[in-house]
Image (tube, rainbow, N blue to C red; front, top):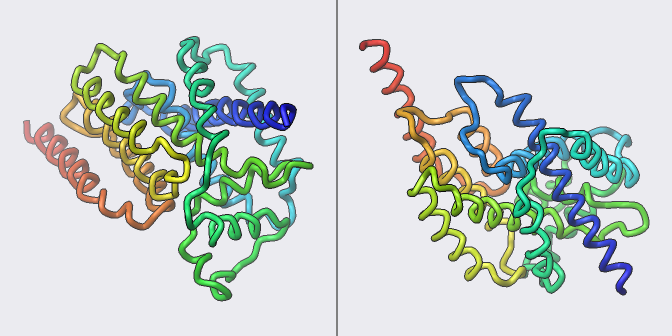
Length: 283
């Protein structure tokens, strides 16, 4: 019992570190240009990039036609840890590493939301097979409505333990948004972001105190809060970071189609950038 809990904690914390490493490298590779630079100094933003990267990667990985297996899944996780250990520029902020420790108890006492076992878990089980199944939605409509996030969860199928760690990715989204907002609260450079982050954090901790409420709809909500705070309320220029906004908006749509309700904000950002560029040309 104690050994299983210790192993569960190790996988949980290594996954947190690995997401940070992959996200940081992904951000530096695809979002490094000066005109579309990431404005945040909040290291938890890297984890959002890491989650987004793994959603894309796990979907492609699923169609590797027999290449994937439990040992490769474990290697992918550990490779991110190796990147972290070799990274000389990794964050030195102690609270970054401490927040996942504080919130670990939340996943220990979890109870999955009502529809998880109805079709989400069954979908993950199908994805853990070594071979992709094309057209499975024709057999049961539940697979059509499943979130692409389940592909990411299917990566946590490791040797011997198999299905024991499927809840970790979903809970890490909760940890990441809490850590992101908490870090913003102590950012004295932006008072509006400071206040808004405090309001969101209090709301999340009260509303989502039970893990059974952490369905896939709330993964979407956490990402939308991140986009809203990071790219709309931290913006000091006349234009918005369109590349990042559109990227994360696409990821949100892959979680749930209801993310389309955030489209007016994306249209506003595009219009704002267009107006700003037009004014600079005319001026």
